[in-house]
Amino acid sequence: MTVPPTARTRDREAAQALAAELSKLVSLPATWLTLGGTLVVNLVLAIAFTIAGLGGSTGTRSAPDIGLASIGYAQAGFVILGVLAVCSEYTGGQIRTTLTAMPRRALQFTAKHLALAIVVLPAAAITAASGVVLAAGVLGDTAAPATSGRVAGALGGATAYLALTTLISAAVGALLRRTLAAVVVLLGYFFIVGPLLRDHTPAARYLPDSAGFAMWFPPADDASAVTPVHGALLLMAWTVVLIALVVLGYRLWDM
Image 1 (cartoon, one colour):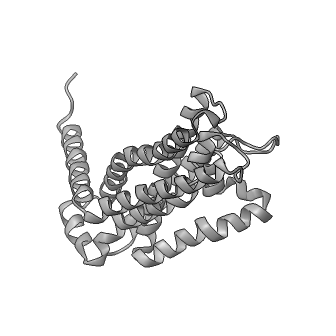
Image 2 (tube, rainbow, N blue to C red):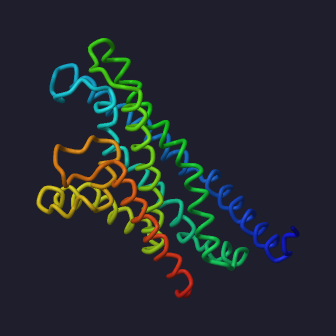
Image 3 (tube, rainbow, N blue to C red):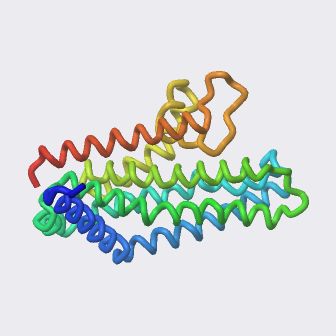
């Protein structure tokens, strides 16, 4: 079966767009500074939580639970990365050059998100695993037993949460087009508004942060609690909806 020339052209254009966005992302110093700084902060926090666990302050000796407790704070680095990946082009007007080379805005934005996912997924996995490995090493024989399935599920959930949170942050950054405004809105939600809503509104469990936490923390003994699978589906739905809104906006807004 012969592939139509139009299809080949579109495939080549998509590949070139992805390569261009990936090249821009990996050549951006802020990418590696943010990821490196986030990893260091996560390890420092993991050490603090592990010491607290040795002292009995955490209420658990589970290496996955203690090692991943820092993810709730380390996510700030991934939020910032997602915003910087998009808004850095608006700061100096480079977005005009980008869209001149790639006039199909939906393709350009999709390629940017895919490039971001390619970079973020391994970084998120390393960040999540570093805390668990550290906690397991320090706790040693005193650690509560955990099955390989429980550890793999927790690490997979935390990794996916960080990656999807980065993509959501990139979408919000594209909507606001201002680095500081996007960072303030996102960090304000994840660290202030989200926790307040979780404490006072049962429906908050369907919001991105609460649904994401359910991906690696075991659900409470409550029939209405969000399971890891449901949490993943909810967070993916939020991600897709926000990206779709940006793509629609890209097609309608002027530069």
